[in-house]
Length: 187
Image (tube, rainbow, N blue to C red; front, side, top):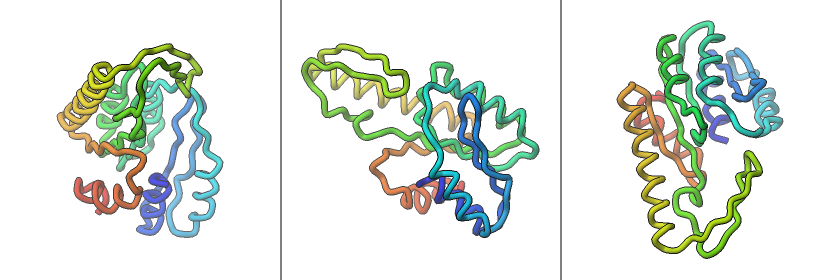
């Protein structure tokens, strides 16, 4: 919904729009301009499927290589990539792009309502892990997640990348109308 809302704003303002779903075989919509592409854009988003693990650095570098002209690039991601994202973001910056990252996490990833003996399954890989979670471990987890989020924000800001931490239970309209406008990403 967030990506569709941002894309629609682009079409309404007659800006050139390309949407790319990063994956091993990226799917793209555009480049297009103008309101007449709205229905096709919504079909594109409706057909989009999340798939497996992504080497985000490699995908962003590849995207930067294929980029014909610089512009605003908004990356919406959980940033769970074994190789990170900074090298790919640097490739976009080197091409002259303005980069914004919407770091999207579920509330349960930040503040898990879990305790006891559990079997956790990674939704992207299917790998399972047996864990025992007590209050101290849960607190340490929450601290480490916050440290990670802070380090992502600090490193992005240091490089001139707009960084917006978002939880999935926040209305997408708020992210567009408040967070992204406040940073000057949406004008």
